[in-house]
Structures are given as C-alpha cells and as structure tokens.
Image (cartoon, rainbow, N blue to C red; front, side, top):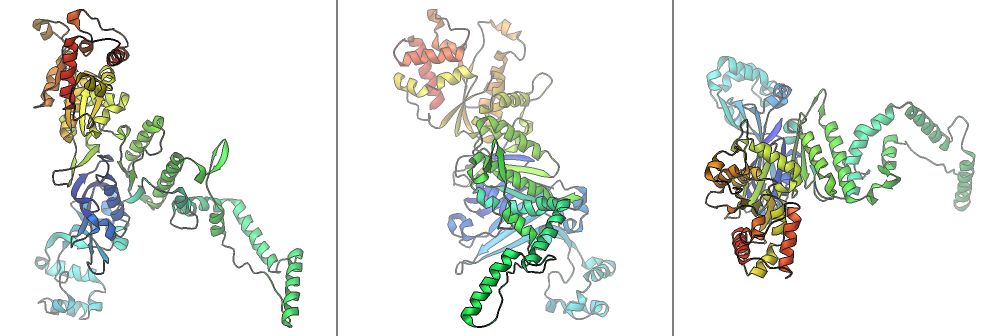
Length: 604
C-alpha cells in the first residue's frame, strides 16, 4: 500500500492542510513553513508516538482537537485478503485517523486511533449491555447464546451469523469511523515508517545499550543471527562455558591456579580479621553471549585507516544513519513471505552532502521509490532533489496564504503540451538534467526567467548597474534569476510556475533576425522565433520583456555599428558591463535606456 493523502489539523505550526503524495514526493517552500512538521506528523501517526503539549499550535490546545488523517491506496492483493487489514478497508482504501485532546487543567494528553470503514451495524454494536438487554431481540438471542455478557460474546461470530441469517433487515451495512487500538489492530496494517530527521547525533544511532537504537536492531535482527550460524560460534560458547566452570573451580582440570591462590589469600585475610572459617570464590553468573557481543561491537569505517564513526564527517555519519535505518526497515517490514510497505520520511537529505554527490543522492532516492512497496517523502531546499520533469505531481510547494494558514500547490502532467514534434515535458526534463538550477525557480518567492548564461552573467551585476543608472529595483532581493537553458524550455517552466502560483517575469530574445513577415511565416515550427507566441500565452497579464533582436544587442548598439562578439558571449557580455561599471568604457544612450527599462521590468 501507498500513502496517497494526509490531512493535518492543529499540529505545531499547521492549523489545517491537505497533501497528496506520489511514490517520490518533495516538499519545498521557505524556512519555517512547515515542511518538517508534515514529516513529523506522519512519523507520529505511523510510529504510534504520543503527541505532547508542544505539538499544539503555540503550545495552546485551546480545546481544539489535534487530528491527523492518513489515506492509503494501491493495496496489494495479499493485503486486501489479510483479515487484519481487509476488515479495516473502505472501498479498497485504508483510512486511519489519530485524534488527540489535552486536558486544560491537568495538561494530560489523550489519543484515539480510528479507521473509516464499512461494517455491519448489529443491534449491540452501538448499545451498552444494559440497554441491549431491553432490545426486542435480546430474548430470542439470549436463548441461543446465553444471558450473561460473557456467554453472549464468547463466540460472537456465531451470533453474527445467526443475525445475518434470520434478521438481516435489522443489520444494515454502514460506513463510519470505528475506534481501533494501534498496537493490536493497526500496527501490522499500516506501512513501516523510516524517519531521518535533519538533526541527530550518531552516538544515539549507534548506542548499543539501547535495544531500540538502529545499531542494536541491526545487530540483533541481522548481524548476530549471521554470527550464530557460523560453526566457530558453537566452539566459542563451549570455551566460554568451560572458562566459567574453571573460574568456579568446577572445570575438568580443576580451578585456575593463579586465581585460586589470590582467592585463598583473600579468604585467609577475612578469617584472620573476623575469626571464623570461610572461603571467597569468584562467581561470574551466566554469561549472556548476545549482550556481551552487542556491548563489545561497533561499526568502523575503513578508508585507508580504521576510524571510529564519531570522528567521521557529518556527511558520512548521516549517510550511515540512513543506511542503518533502511536495512532495519527491510528487516522489520518482513511478514513471512510478505512485507509491509516502507515509507521513508527524509528531512533535508542534502545536508552535509558534497555537491557532486547530489545527483547520485537523488538517483538513489528515486530508485528506492520505484521499488514495490517503497515510498519516499522528503523536505528539501535543494533544486537537485526536484523530480518534476519526470513526475510533475511529485513537487509540493508550501507557503502561507493571506490568513497565515499553510497552503499546498502542485501541478499535473496534463498542463504540458505533447505531440510528435514538440514535447514540453521532455524540454523541461532535459533542462533539469543538464541545468539543475532551473529548479531554483520553483523555490523562488519571485522568479525572473531568462534564456541562458549570457543573461545570467549580466544580471549578476544588476544591483551595481541599477545604482550606476539610478534605477529603483525594490524587488531585487526577492527575485531569483534563473536560466531556462534554452528558449523552448521557457513555456514548460512558465506553466509549472503558474501551476504552483509563483510570481515571475520573463526576458527573452525576439529572434527575428531581420527576416520579413513572409520569411517568418516559412520558419520551421521549432525555430526560436516560434516560441515567442507560446511564451506570451503563459505570461497572462504580465507581458514578457522581448529584446530586439538578441540580448547582446542591448550592450552593443547596432545603430552605432557596434558588433557583438560571436563567441564566449556570457564572458564578453559580463566583461563589457563590468568595464562600463568601472568607467573604462561608456555605453550609448540607447543601450543605457534599454538597460534602465530592463532592470525596471525585472525587479519592480
């Protein structure tokens, strides 16, 4: 089964929100918007953790119920057949709700788990026993199944069968919430959760004195059983037992001489002081081999030299914590020949990871999510972890509305145009593969989309240009300049930004190349000029800033016979602006006016 949706009410900073999930889902948004809160809410429900006062908004329950509702779909056939799960389903979905209340005086927190399912509403289901005894069917039923509550419910299945046979009209099927105890009813039904928080200490993960630590679970469930299968383990136990007997003086060869001498001297000294006859001996008790192995064991990273993990870098420590949790998840999710689904909740996977490994990290997480029974949900600030090109629905943008409530926006695959000659998703997918920074636009408060690196190079000097030209650019700090990596990628990016509700501006070349109207009509449908119309369609009321004819023509005035270099355009454009800022060259008034218009459009 897969988690398809969660509804969260009154949990930490979230008053109310709903989120749909894919096999691989990334939550993005500004800091302190609630991305980690969503993961914490899922972990709380799926791992049966009890909320505390701190988990209510502003630490003030104010009589409000905390409610987290999870919907699971895509159940496998064996899950639907399993009695412990099938009885909890509603139309092939498992819907689980956790509600928590807090007593205003005692601050005691009470929780209740329930499922929304269809069930047969027998007369005794909603009545107390005393009230049921007054029911018109009680006399008939008590003759067959007993008058005491104990006798009546001793084999309730037979009572239900009798009712279904003779009084089916009094046993309607209803759909409603039914309270269920998590450990008894739900723990083996819901997926196993694997939670990787942003902050942790590796010594807690590796602590071998805590039986619930990831390392202890790994050792007890996987490592030690493998050790016990080895022939040497039985020899080890025999030697340990014989040593224990020798310490007690019960070994085949008698006591250990040096030990016996020491204990005899202790006995003589005590008897001399206390004036009585006694003997001191060493008692080891039963040696618990498994506990001894666990206490003596630790993981070492071998890279040129053996290094204890607490001395490894944070990236290595966090990667190992993930590996430990993943290994345990596989083991703990096993149920005979069948396995529970696994949901990975990964908070900011990019933390401490070297930049060149980011692509590999994304590939690992996506590949995990494609495995049967595996789902990955992560919060991130990294454009490298966005998979919107392959699965547009995987990106969830969180932000606040005018009332301060958290809202979720997403896009669907249907927004992209796809035909034999033009596929917007492929353009976006290619751009994200070769220019991951394109995804920065989805994180932006306000995005400025440009065609390529030349524009990006010039806009890196936007603040200095504005100061020199006397242009007011009030939204400069709120604007992220993003290179689309090509003109035909811009329509797909704009459709995505529109779907996510991200404010944007667009700057692109006209690409007319001095062609007449009749020549323009003959251009191939994928000529850069043809993209102008599609870009304009996505801009709505925000007209794009169209440069006649290419971006370089702003800096090199053709009317004054200035010729832009045909090679190394990004560097040459950046260098020309830098030289202008430093007073080494001057630009024509026409170029300055165009730059003023460009900056004003882009940042105001």
